[in-house]
Image (cartoon, rainbow, N blue to C red):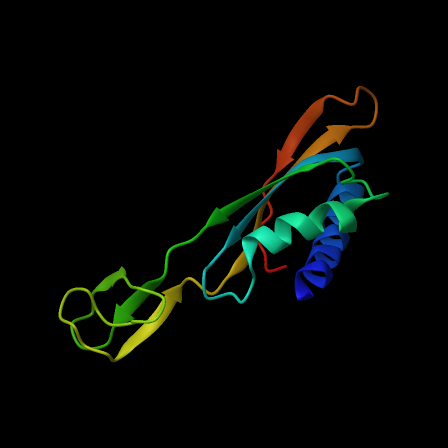
Length: 130
């Protein structure tokens, strides 16, 4: 189950964000995951609590937003939604397309809690690959 390794890398990244912002705890994490990323969102959710145990993100909520599969057509220059197993242009039907989204896994945001009050202090907008 490589989702556990992915969650461990996520916790490392979130721990760095918390440390850089002098936060005592992370209460929420939002990820954007594409269907072509090779990650199974349900398995990622299940592995998250194991990876987060004992870290600054212990007990944090994990929100996973699914991104659409989008392609850009080399023939007609249009960008459109596509199906996972059919990456053709929705405008002209051409198969010569370039994937624009759907294979990513991005850390979208981290909700940090202040060391003094343990109330949600701020939301760090992080965007990067996990």
